[in-house]
Amino acid sequence: MAPELLPPDRQPVIIAARRTPVCRTNGALGKLRAHELLAPVLRELVANAGAEPEAVSDVVVGNAVGGGGNVARLALLEAGLPVAVPGITVDRQCGSGLDAIVLAARLVAAGGNPLYLAGGVESTSTAPLRAYRNDDGGPEFYRRAQFVPASFGDPDMGVAAETVAQEFSVGRERQDTFALRSHLRALAAAKAGHFDGELVPLKTGTATVAADDGPRRGLTSAVMARFPPVFVDGGTVTAGNSCFDADAASAVVITSVRRAQELGARDGLLVLGTGTAGVHPAVLGVGAATAARDVLTLAGMAADELELVEFNEAFASQTLACLDQLGIEEERANLDGGALALGHAYGASGAVLVTRLLAQARRTGTEGSLGLAMISSAGGMGTAALLQYLHLQDG
Image 1: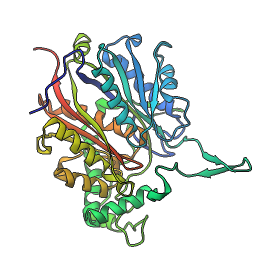
Image 2: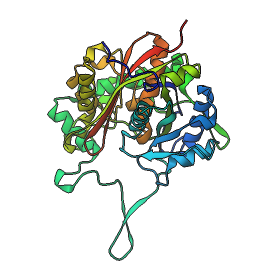
Image 3: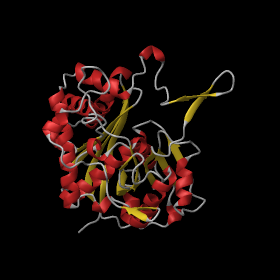
Image 4: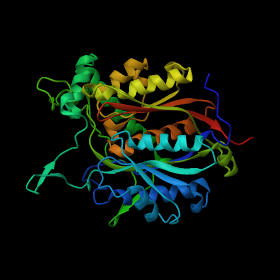
């Protein structure tokens, strides 16, 4: 049984979701800055929701490695929304896009029938160079921000993925098999048109980018086995069973059930529960499992009641470890492939999960089906959201 709903003027529901293609860093979308990726998605969402642009209460956007300056405000103005619409940018690193949606859901639950655009964006290709200021005033460039105090080790993502693989007994062959399945599923989904309704094509120069460019044809188990470990000598985490960095934007329309019905929305994903949890930074990849377990427990539900599961595949090792902890068979997750095939656009990835869940729920059309979106974040955190697909109009 799903938890009891809030009153209709406070029950959050996601009624539309869109994303750009997810493309490799310095690839097809490499010349577009973050706000240029996001603006077309926001524009499409407003039109799809049937709402007037001035009806948008706020735009909540996750971003991890941008240049600051509130990309939410920049993108919404680029999209042509009225100057009266504000914007806020949030940063929980890889979880930022999902956390933006969670924040908007909680604002809806506070009441007032608002309407939000929420999601995330990342242009890893155009992310600014970053530097500390030395004592002499000169720059000391760094590759990534410090996530936790040095006393915790502040491990790189790949090193943490190796630690997870070792501590949770996730072997190399199993990681490779999962990664290969992700590519095969993404290729099959694209061929079947499963992504068509959620994609917003982008113009860059004289070209139009209308499809993801990550899934690789020709991969086999033998090819996967040839990749050497890249983070720890003698390890199991390779370029083949790790995600690649990507550029993308994704966002949703989230409002109250009452407002959604007034807008004529036919269906949507009710937000039944959300949560974020912390874990030790050395095993940062399992944060999502802790968050998901907390959300399910609070809702009084078990993992086997979930019909759809979307988990960001930063590394096969952490994905499998989380699924194992939750008691979810690996074949049940990411039915159309995940970030191992599509790529990981940091701040956008959590919103991509929700976009995928809405598309999958609409494809199956099963009233009351339950879905879970979850993502782990740098520094040892994880965010999860429990969602339910329902028809919103009678007849």
